[in-house]
Length: 269
Length: 269
Image (cartoon, rainbow over all chains, first blue to last red; front, side, top):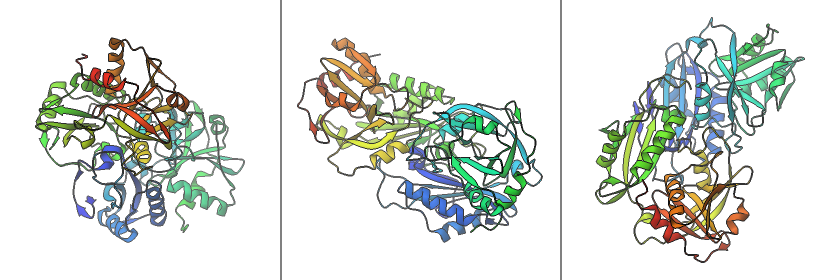
């Protein structure tokens, strides 16, 4: 089911700036029994991303209602796209224009359902992410780098691709954030210049200290990943997954993934 | 008027990857008496941009027919957007999927009509373009940098903003390519790492040698712009315009703009 500005619809205006320029932001969140998980985090991130693009964020209650309205009965996924709407031709963003709300649901992917393996296989992508501090961290609609990176493999046995920036710093997965454990401490890449700062990553950074795990955000070269005790990816749909293989390198379980995944689902408001 | 895959429509599928990811390319071209100007160049660029994104480019004759169908009777503008269409959720591009064709017309903007001043005022933008060789030169639908740069000013007296990359090389205008004349030679920024390589620029690079003007593509620091004999911008809608003022710097006419603008409209096939 799809709601556009609260009304059932399958289409959007062909002149929408979301289509013309990718002028908007999005969220992909998990739903359970018709309600979104981690709503407070998702809405806060949406509001922050809107602010970064000078886009008026919709009212929280209105958006929550729409998410519940489209959500599948059992478990599912809801995607929220907010765009700057249709405007005059040209890049200049129209002033004081309410964002267009596109809220759509999808079944929970098989790989995110209960019983899916907690360990995955990843690969290095050859595409290098460009560094743009003005857009870094934001889950905006300009995602061609992700599309090109994901097009680098078709082997269904490979779940995720890892990306570096043009200086060789590891940034994260095509559709996930990256975390590593080393000597009992959690490290995740700094996303000040590129990448998407996801809600699952933010929740893990809040949860880890409660588990007695110190956290570090910084520059991680590929060698740091290879030397990790445990490598993990996370996002709002899959939670935390252990990377068991990265191209030719394999890791046995070091025991952190389940604890961190459980912590992710605790009430962290 | 708007045609979507050849049929009159005002909307596109809300699940289109052009909206979700900016997964597509576009062209903005001028029409005269219901026919596109510089069609051969525009189609060749569209095909090259599609190839760079592994997108199947529509048939030339079919697209030409659609452009003529939507074009205004007198002078006008037609925008072509090609997207990878609606697909399964996720970044992986579907295989062997025909591109969605969105062809829409608009009146010729006042600033592009006969009698509009041939000289314009520009400013430097503070946003720095990210360098992404995989996307450089392509007129793709990921245009948030242009939107943010254009949002830096609202003074209607300023026609264009000039952008540098993160290393300080001048790349071009928000909606145009940049050219300068110095000692009778034409220089334009190298677009191997960012920017859009427009059709008007390509035509000028072909036309200039016929006027006896040597051409150079390379790195231009801001100082090279300031030291130019004449600074110009170009695109398919406005042709060539002289930059008379750039923030506090002004240039008197050096006499190159009209000749280059005329050359742009010659048959250069």
